[in-house]
Length: 404
Ligand code: AMP
Ligand code: MG
Image (cartoon, rainbow, N blue to C red; front, side, top):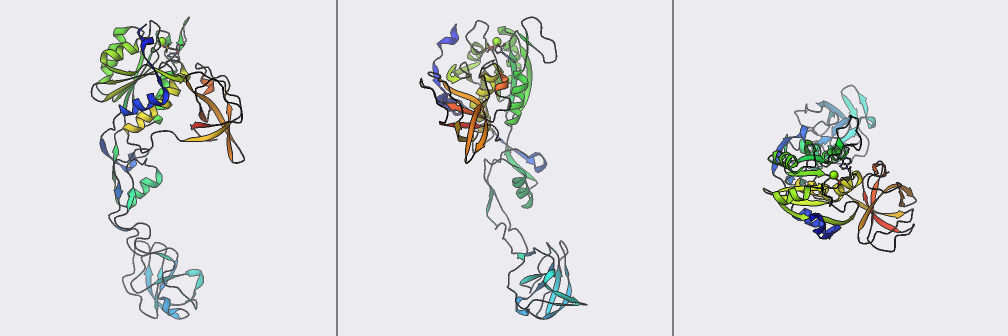
């Protein structure tokens, strides 16, 4: 019963140990088309101002403000992409369309709604202000401005900015390559009818989704039996090409729990037990070549909660994210949370708004085998260890999974 000798580590301390041993991955350049969700590896700066030329914000006439109230001769047109190649001299105007370059000489644009047109002439309002109705050079960005900061995740607006400043490719952190397997003699492949005493492997599909959601590329290894040699071979094959190994099951102290001894033989086990509920048997090891291994407990809720507490922040660190943790918010408990002595507990809740507050309602039985407690949950509320319990109406921190 080697497993029971691992010290019980405080949950926050364990999370810090994981991050301390997790390294940021290298940089690669990807085309904008493939950059959604990736994390920028370097700060980006604008090489040139935006807009690069004075650009009309409306359809109308480019004129001199000093010609207010006059009837002006229209010399030509400046459309988007087709500038007028002349000057707007006193007493003249150029028709201009949205996005068209404001010609030399003009210092304002009058909206088409505000003029009177007669043949080749246009009469402008009695009062005009220089600088109106067009975007000046550098209004949106000045040359040298920092446009995006390293550690930013690229979404629609960020990718748009990169494109607007002329970058087809951006430097991003490599995605973590993760080898994923389930362990347990009782497991059968999804879709097959379980025999006596068997259950369907659900963790692999749940963890595949969680890993992809966290930005990983996943190598699915299947189900390993509870036998040391096949388990070892499967892991060794997969490790050549992985930054991280994620297993589920086989980390508690039963005689068939083989993951801890295997990780000990391959590297260094830093965490073997955590003061966490669910997730006490969570195991973390480092392997040669900056690789990390996460031995998640077999119970479905335990595997996903330990994923959120330990694995997701580590994958975010590997990708260079500026923020490693999911956002947290204070929420008011709508139920009495019973105490867990000595272990931080993450309870699954749904959230709803009451006035200015978020109120947390339990998802029902918090059994670590009951995935229904996590399906549809908006948050994991953090119940500190203690022997008092926490009464309904108390405010606690919640790790937000999704907002209602
Ligand atoms: P273990 O951590 O291997 O002792 O497993 C704890 C519990 O989780 C047992 O009831 C297992 O049957 C269950 N379990 C382990 N692996 C999986 C899996 N991949 N999918 C669903 N349940 C699992
Ligand atoms: Mg097992």
